Image (cartoon, one colour):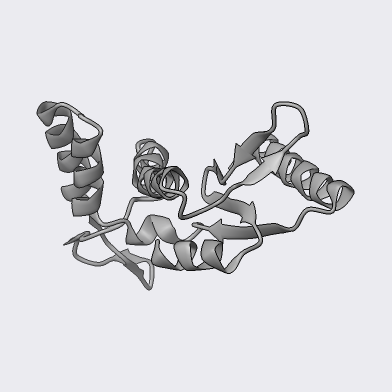
Length: 160
């Protein structure tokens, strides 16, 4: 995550927490760090997300070829071992990986929107005139889940 993005995310969270303190409203806030998640992204899940987002079949095939044909080797005493195929995860340093990770986290975005729309999760309202309700914020490999403090919200998040 770039320094600018990290600073913006910290500022937003600080503003939300300050607003909650000023207005004496109870806030529930969870931070999810997907820092190690690159290694565990399931390729089938990624293809399913792209299908649900109406990616053309040819694009899905190209992306699948890019990630499924990846191989790796390990340096042992300075000498590389025989190459072996990778079975899951996104390669760090691959210019395509950040974009594919965004597609993978889109699943959480869709689930959170569905919880809010079906009134199973109540987001946190910010402001007095024309308040904005926020349920989640996603920044690169960090996600913040915000809502009113309630057991119903906790149960909804556990179901996700």
